[in-house]
Amino acid sequence: MNRVVQSAGRLIRSETDVGIIALLDKRFTYSNYTALFPSHWYMHTPRELVTRNYQQALVHFWAEQGKG
Image (cartoon, rainbow, N blue to C red; front, side, top):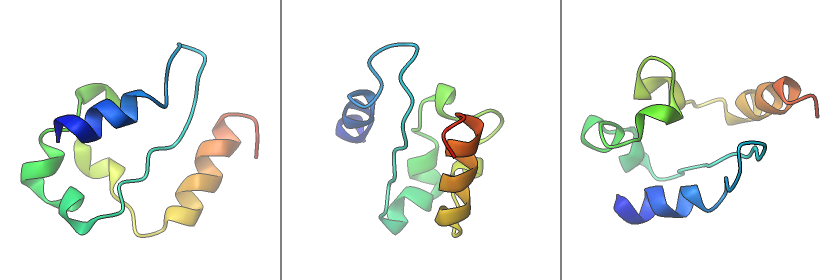
């Protein structure tokens, strides 16, 4: 999990960078994995990061960034 978090950190280098990190393996939905997600990745609970409707999540993310 350390490698996953380190790899994700390579996406965001400055406070103005934005991006999407997609963890596509089912194991990342398990509570023993989501408990290891850094708290700055989510607002309330790591479960909010899990979606089956990734297309809608991507559109929503980029719309919030003013690029959608």
